[in-house]
Image (cartoon, rainbow, N blue to C red; front, side):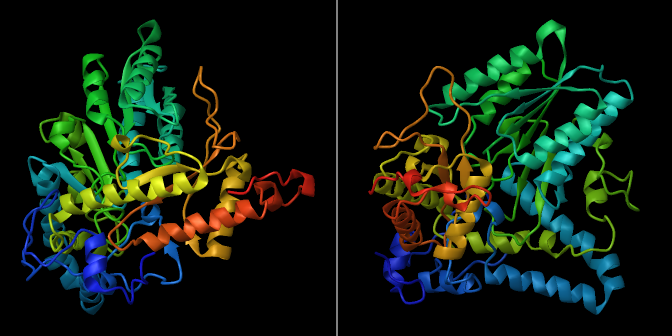
Length: 482
């Protein structure tokens, strides 16, 4: 078992996170930092950077809200104080220059051709609203015919699914979902399902106006073969492709021109160490549609291009958008930069996922090649997770009773022609944990999750015990000990 992060020897903790004392500054998805660090970051420095985290909590859920190191928070505080000290000078002399600096850093990090292709927004949901708003206007103004299709994955992020219905379905679009399998066995299975759904969307000569494709689905978490799907859309005559890559930058390599989508967005506060909330939206400068996109919050910059519109949506705190370069400086303190961080996170999360699966007599929800820095692990079936509400109540119990923070997914969908997955005791598996690994995590975090679930199983716990309106009899406590 690992030592507590506050007392672990630097060398041991550094070895776990793949660090040593050699100088190395690989960039991965990031430009060269403006200030070169003296040496590769040490374990003690990592602990200091994240000392603001609640030390009592095993935080294996970086995916939901991300994390931000103290050095980047300090840079953010500098911008906040600058605004508060002299707001007029900040607005007229500092803000736009700072935003251009951040946009240029993002453009280099993601392979954009020009800084004009990058807009900074609050999050990927805002980026989706920008793209979907334009699609809704296209229906309303008669550029698209009522009944034309918009294609999305069944596992699209909930807020984006609701945005699709709020914007384009309401405007007259036919929404077609791709019923992806889960657990998923291979990228080929995803490609086959997408192709079949695309054929449905095109039935009767219907035009497919927009495909919304996740790069990494949120829940369940699966890395999607996005480039293959974008290529398929081009071959099949889909008008536009929007890639919702909220989790991607910092988890998987991102090259927006290689992906080839019309619109690509990713959060910088999830896996790229920026404070919340900041994301980028990439559009191709040679695409006429770029000049037709508008921020849904209309302010003085309306009509001056999306980057400028997004750069001023009224008086607010813009500091998270101004520290991208400092976040890049931070990642380049690690051996291999963001690429090294990605690689080590992936290796470690797979290792921890397999450890949990072995302890619980279950399996991973996806093969390693379809995982980034997040992994789905099947929970013991005897826990009886039978609804989204069950999943949320068990998650809350793990937080409050065991100080373990981890999302739980209820899988209600069956893969056609396949039996529901079962654990080693023959119980159907409907509950999954989604574990993340980031540079601040240690093995003890996952061991605490393992032990908490094992304790629940040993005590005969079932999710039905947490249902407020249901009487639970001891006869229902059929969990087998593991």
